[in-house]
Length: 292
Image (cartoon, rainbow, N blue to C red; front, top):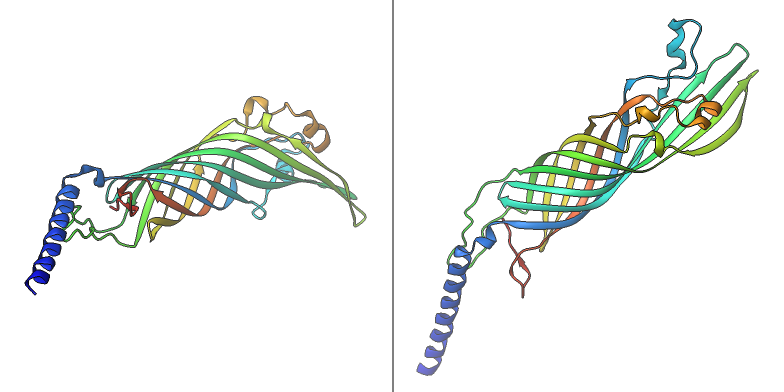
């Protein structure tokens, strides 16, 4: 009996010493006070056009009629998609800085009318642009700040399973490709007919780089040893998305569709979901991540 009691005491003393050792090690280890993340994100975006200056090939004889020939930017069919990877560094329980590398599809459409008494002409212009985005952002996590130190039972500090956040950032975009589809539709004596439907590469008449700011919010959800994120952002372009120096370089658009690009910037709303993985672990054997 004494032998069994001594064995049990030995086991408990060993476990206590190990727990004490782990507790001392973790509380002295600054490695646990920060975390790096790598992940993926994707989701739809909705784009709208903010016109800065208007341009047109066709000029009415009466300047008061100029608005009749202005481009009519559409609100529908402006849905695109965004997808890419994320890198984040959390150096404090409530503060995260990060950068994303994404492909951002921007779509928009406008109509242009040439009214007439017996015959009218309408042009439909659909644009499909792809940008390589590099957003740099600051994220604030709405949570209670807890002690970073582990207790003597080797229990992890309590971290909420769901943490909402707000974020703000600066976005840098590089134009990858830009395509345009344009159609000419005539209406005469109440009969409508499509004369042509063509495509054109318009990368040369678009600005190669754009800059914007964004603000948004969302939440982080813990799932085992990784996290899911959901976020919604509003983005505002800060510069002209059109290349002013190349405005009249595409003769096909001018001769066939009487089209000259306006000066404009983009506004967009995006709703994204993502998954992020911690890159620092307290225990490689059990894949116990540093959680702050």
